[in-house]
Image 1 (tube, rainbow, N blue to C red):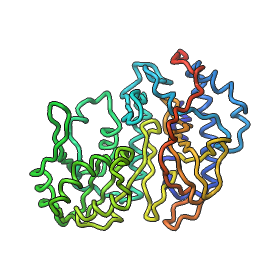
Image 2 (spheres, rainbow, N blue to C red):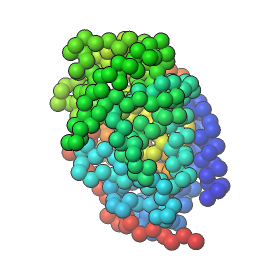
Image 3 (cartoon, rainbow, N blue to C red):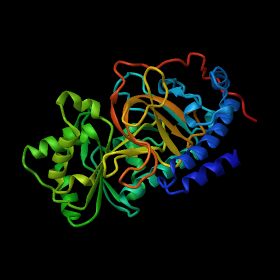
Image 4 (cartoon, helix red, strand yellow):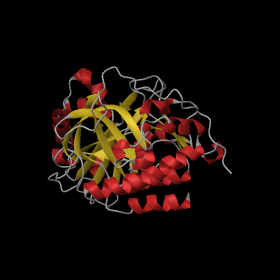
Length: 374
């Protein structure tokens, strides 16, 4: 395990978007094979699933040929894990906006550490390394439990390394309804008028609890040096017919900044530590320690540039649960397999919604039984 951890750390130490696609493919392929072998040794049900795959993963020549899991399998409770209960330091849960059953991800100390390092490496590439005042458009209630985090609290915490101090500008009543703390928001804006600041919120929370009430009053917070990151919640805005361009324009007007200061990123608790922010061209990219495969919904073969398909996320970061190769329920379009004008190497893609009314299945033979460890 120490040798495997050292190899993962070496990938984490690379600039996240500098590798040519073929070079990245080779490095990921060999490491993912080792992790598949490790998972089979640690979990009887997982080993059974991998053995039933049509192709022996040892002979795979591309990452796309490796066996993957449908993301829904991580809804198991207790969570599927490659480590013993005493080794689990924290459990992450998804927001479960499309299902009553959230995904559950068990993190040990090593995977938790890599999660933080992965997010920091990606965000640093997009906004720079400096620490700055951090405004969280949410309530601090989510951060009170150290052993369990939801999707929102995990995202909030993931940006803490870029913060000098954190300010939460929403309040929650006894029914869980959110309200804007206008005084705290105004104080933050006045105290950091000319400073570089960082702001984060879930997409639908930013829109419903910040943009809509303040833009109705023509408020401008005058924070031109802001960087606004947001994630999740687009599905909840569909009924309001809020397009991404409108969202960015309204948010930029509220803060008095350029729309280019607003970065939408996609992330899943199931793919721990790997997030996909928009580059300045509006595309998302995979880092050196992870990647994306877009598969044809019928054949599950990788699609050509310009085509749409189902997103598979790949990551070498987790070793405490089977989160390395996950077929999601999201759709995306491949813009190009390399050559984005932003300079980041590898696939450039854009999300295009959810798989309609789909619950991807196929892992009935995966049990929660874990192989005993010595």
